[in-house]
Image (tube, rainbow, N blue to C red; front, side):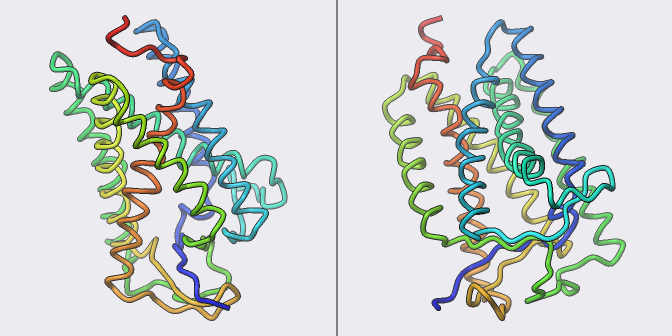
Length: 269
């Protein structure tokens, strides 16, 4: 069997679902806040379309074996057998709500009147979420030198070149690019700011995860054994994960509501 390329979750990000639930709650709070303050449902539409698109992706990975996970804990309770619970939490908590958060900051940073205030708050969020936790982990001895390369019982292993996922992802990325090209200037700016914020979040988080030995890339057959990917391949696959799988893919969550005219272009307001 041909070798695969696998992205590994070796730390709490792989098994801790309490944090994912908290992200879902926080994201919904942002949706409600923006709805009440700006009298629009844009964030709810991003949440709904994001959930449909990414939950579908995770279901495909689950049923076709593209992602293999071990135990999953929610408030200390093992929910591994509760696929109906952990699969939506995985999809929404990991990606969809991060897209909502990225759009939330993007909308406020692109506005010159609120840029300074929300720019500072974004930096605070970034430091608290993506810098301090990993400095603490590093200080506790969690480093790239301590990773369990090739461990069959690692918390999460996802095949990044699973064909079904690649095809669906490619289609959605093309749709996102078409929307960015065809939409009006203000909507395009909104989408580009969302991508920019997402890239900053993902670069900081991915480096922190790698730096503290929580995430890395392996290569090998589907059934193993697996070895650590060469440095250049690791860099390329992390870049692919950040730019394509998160940056361009998640802007689809915004593009589809625009396509269906559920979100009005700002020039129409």
